[in-house]
Image (cartoon, rainbow, N blue to C red; front, side, top):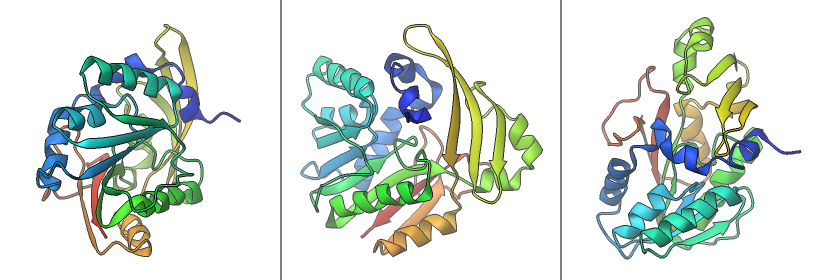
Length: 251
């Protein structure tokens, strides 16, 4: 059975690059560089790299990057963009739930719900975190964004349903207070001009859940901030108005 996120990215690469939520790449990469202390010897794994926007920008700045994604279409565009920018990136068609990297990378990034939180079960989401952790070196760092459950919990279910949370595309939302999952209908037009309606199922996480999951995996330092697109920074307190949270964890 094809899942909604697989269907979404079948023919959506060019449109994806034009979406509002993909326009913060430069600042977000600036932040990643700061977290690396500008050490270009560090190896980076971009999980759910999509069309390669962060991977390519990092490679342009001299970093060695591997990018993985579940979508052949997204990776094809990423490879073409990398070629146009004259950078070499190891793009691989892989499922983040089934990785075999072992202590190979200094930094892992999973940004803009690249993989984590999209899966249909909590066990699948956890397997992504587990595999990511296994891919990290012993002193490695993980940076990712995920959906912030404080947002729909704070706002009434009625307001959550009525808000246009995906640039006016999402409607008929139903946030399940027992599972922290949002079931919604997403209307979009793909790269060929075809209109689609997808039944989405995304998991929102409370900060305490993320902290517990990461501690279970052996992370010692865990920081969680508000995750504003194009404005990643430490010290930005997570609030109930933040749609996403920015997580920085170190083993």
